Image (cartoon, rainbow, N blue to C red):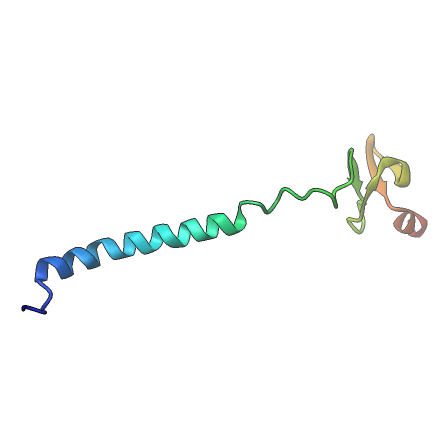
Length: 83
């Protein structure tokens, strides 16, 4: 009984092993990440505006608009009091 591996068999294994491992890793990563990003419960419904000073987001009714040469900037109540 010959227990040595033929050079063709060894070359074939090392030729296909990186591809097979890459496909397996990609499939595992895809399966782990496929349900992420669908949870939008933290995002408020409707349009939000970012404060021009600190970047805090809020709905338009809670922001203070300020006009600058025809452009409107929205500030949160904390930053609007400071301006």
